[in-house]
Every structure is written in structure tokens, then in C-alpha cells.
Image 1 (cartoon, helix red, strand yellow):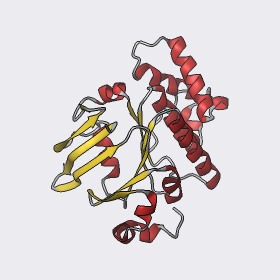
Image 2: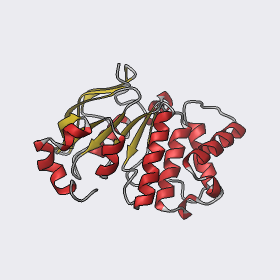
Image 3: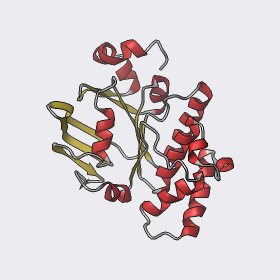
Image 4: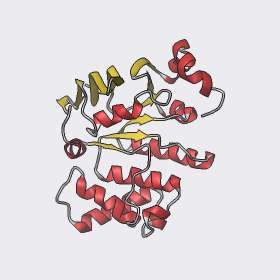
Length: 245
């Protein structure tokens, strides 16, 4: 049984279908990519899964349970966490406290402050931010703010992690480190569903890829199948494939 499944998921903004009758499955333990041109509906789909938005129609199931339209905190405590396309950190709060908040909020509500700080410290080591744990989040580089978001999401103890353009704006060294981090997250048994424009990353990391265009799913398959799809090349990869991004 898939860990996450959507059937006929649809969301309109005014008269425009941002996501239109999209079916998808995410298998336990896989890394699934979500690609498409800007405005294709990718982040909207993540917003629907995490309940930042409520679909007009369709159903979303997590581990077989209908989560359509539940409150975001309930979905988080069921085991779904996410990062954001535009980094969202508590800017004036130290890095360690940002992550500890995830522990308080996640699947173990009522956690003691001692346990939350211990877990946050371990996660900062995992993502490579131990040395800046006392630094205000606003003073981190973009790459480290993205790592902080990942650590905070992991602090909620997810079984499924939604990553929204984690690689955007990173230099080649940072990109390699981010790809390695995603691999280590998978090694912890966490399923990955990721939006990405950096094709090198998504082709290397993901087992399968879904392609959206104008809110509709136009293709899905292995990286090899996607890179050789005439439809995908026409609407998306044609402008990306030779740019390495």
C-alpha cells in the first residue's frame, strides 16, 4: 500500500485550475520527484497534501487514512512534514530553538524541554549545523537556512518528508551536500517527495518522477523514461536539459 495517495485532486483559484484531477502515489521508502514549469501547480499540490489549502475535489490518503482537509498540525502529527519554496525560519530565534520547536510540535506532543533540546542537538549534527546552533537563523547562509528547515521538519519525526526546491540557489558544492543529505534521510527510512528544478539532483536522487503542466499530470516514470519522453521534452526539459539545471 502506498504511504501517500491522491485521487482526482483538484484546486481552483478563481476560475483557474491550479491542480486539475491529479492522481498520484508515493510508495513507502522511495524518493519521488515532482517537476514542471513555473506555475505548473507543484507547490499547490504540496499545500493540498499538508493542508495549507483544501482541495475543491478529490481525496488524499496517508497510510490508507483519508487526510483531505484535516488541520495542518494533525497531518504533521500523523507523520507528514515539509519544507517551503521560500525558506521559512524563525529569524531572530537561535538555530537550536528553531529545531526544538519542531520536536514540541511533532508526533510526540508534551515532550520535555530537555528531550527537545537533546533531539534538536542530534539533528543539527545530522544536517551539519552544530557549529552555528546559537546563531540567529536570519544570520545563516541560504544553504544553511535550508538545512535548518530540514532539521526542523525532521524534528517532528516524519515518515514522509515533502521538500520544496531544497536545491534552489545553491552553488555546486552546496548542491552536492544537499543531495548527500537527502540520501542520508532516506537511509533513516523516511520517504521523500520532492519538488525540484535542478535536474541533475532530481535525476540522481529520485526513483520515479511525476511531471505537472498547467495543473495536470502529463507524465510519470523513471528518470530515464522522463528524460526520453517527447511530451516532457517539449513542455519542460527542452529548455532545461542542456542547461544542467
